[in-house]
Image (tube, rainbow, N blue to C red; front, side):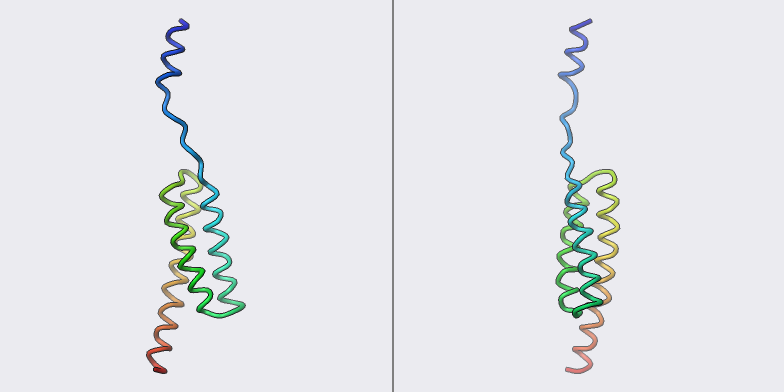
Length: 97
């Protein structure tokens, strides 16, 4: 009986590291990017949006469970910001250039 318990504990899979803090950092960067869009200007928001997009992709790869779902939501929010603001700034530059 004791031998069977030892075999079960030896064959257990290694513990998966929880890196959900990356998802929270990505969420914070996404919120900061949207606040910068409202308060400061589009260039700062675009920079933070690109950083948030990179952090969100890294969090999506490294996290599991709820952290991955939060990272996917951050990817959507930051990519909308980057595409819309980037397109707007590029359109203005072409139109006025």
